[in-house]
Image (tube, rainbow, N blue to C red; front, side):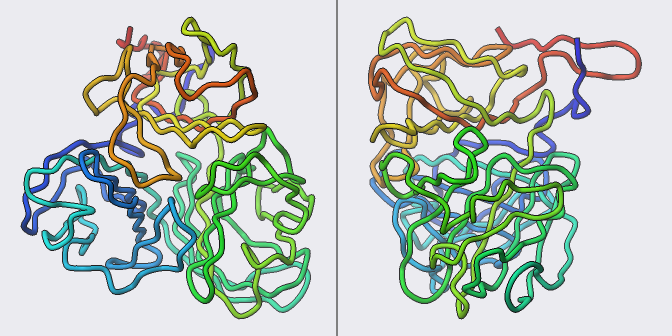
Length: 349
């Protein structure tokens, strides 16, 4: 059995569920998060995504194509702390009194800057990276030239890259996923199936040092700024894969090699939604409550996924077709940890 190098997954990514206070307070995550993704469970409010590279008070929203909002009300994320983040109380989307929320959090941490490479004019970029967990945040300038390469600093090949244009005219999110390859892309804010990605990723597979852009505005306009969230797989901690749905309540089992704490899935040859599950909201196993990255609606129930010690099991025909799905998953704990010379089995069922 192959052991993981990450024995405690929750020191790198963690989900929290909370009830809003209506006033400024600090939410405890367990580490300093560099990416905080908040969604109201009880209210139909947009997803709010903050990161330490762009800075506090600047949100982007996965369910629309709007540019970065730097005029976030006082209820937005106002600080990243050593153990979590501080959120105000003046905005229903993140911390309204008595309303329920979930926040998905990832740690990057090592910061730097440089100049982009490849075709066209090099542009300044800044980044924060966690090579242990295979996650980086890169803010960069576009140059409108196919073959523009962006250093991601992971030291490994990313298998999922999520990009958003953060200024200028509104443009859709762009998602690269290894299971669809370099000539296809998805829009995080839409239910659309995959579309031709040549203009987005230049039909070029990411390497251990860079990812490559086409000339389309969604990822590479010469006068605009972008943020990219880059993920490389780590055994026992994260996985980016695919599976075929049988459109049956006794659905497919997807092996990840760990007990998932967070799963986001999307039908890539159909128009079902980007479905998000986690292990902190009431209802997981067997009738998991779901949220949708592309929609602002409140939490939906009975969409059916069972999170187990080595993967997840589909338990409902809701939001399923007989089609192909891709996913990104992160661990609550590995199936087998590697502490000293002894493997420690996961305690999940």
